[in-house]
Amino acid sequence: MGFMDWFVAEDAYLALAKIQGGLAQGSVTGTTYWVDSSNSDAVDAVGRGSFYAPFATIDYAIGQTTTLKGDVILVMPGHTETISTAAAIDLDVATTAVIGLGDGTNRPTVTLDAAAASIAIGAASCSLKNLQLVCSADAAAFISIEAAGDGAQVIGCSFRGDAAADEPDTVITIAAADDVVIAGNRFNFRSATLASTTGIVTTAATHRIAIASNYIGGNFTTAAISIATASGDIIIADNYIINTAADVAGGAITLVNSTTGILSDNRGHNGNATAIDPGDSCGCDENYFSSTITSSGTLDPGA
Image (tube, rainbow, N blue to C red; front, side, top):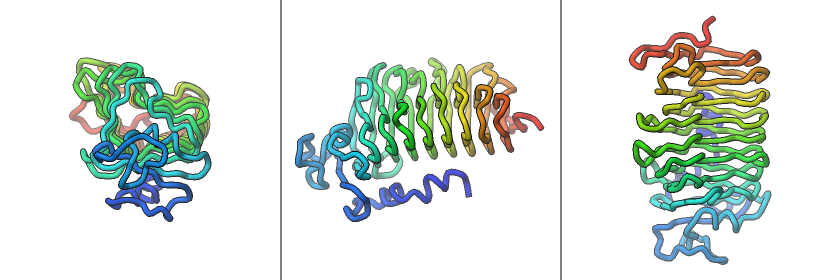
């Protein structure tokens, strides 16, 4: 069983979300709200948010939730919305879950159409699951997990550019939030015309984060995954990484010194022969990378 199974296959909310047609009110501790832009009766107004009279936007639904109640926002298949400003969708109510329904390209789609546009997770134990996130501009960041976002989860989402020239500088930024899980996502940014700095980056010390079972493809000038400030007890496992940048040492995974934890079973391609820079304190087990895109990988770091 892969590492992601602990966070995705056994995740009760995501499993329930796969039941097309919804989530029974009694299945959650809080209130269930519905969002569906394709419903002609959708409107952002107090007293709405039911299956038959849904809200029109995700952020408005978040504003109706109650902190620490475990409220769930179900976003219907085919829902679309576009955001243009920083934190236009802001998960700032603790224990709120935003779950997309549907499969494949029928999942809900959120498009970032301006450089400033972003999604923020600014409260504890919030989650984003099963959404399509599309960048139609050279944005600064897709998702910012803020210092108050302990326990944030981003699971089962896909990230891509709307065109070859549409890439964020960073896909997910993590501040000083602990116990974050980023698992089972797809990052598709292998553009030949633009470069991203990082796929996932920490900007302050964090602890017990798990980055597992993601596909991360892009032209990353620093690294696909960068732990940029000394952090503790991290897990980076079972990721498939392709960095098409020409020659970036540590371009798959790079950790600053004094970061502890484990790097295990990560695989892929990096333009430089050194794909992983584990710093001086992190354990490594069975990571394989190649500097030639058509060749199988070798142990990195070596034995």
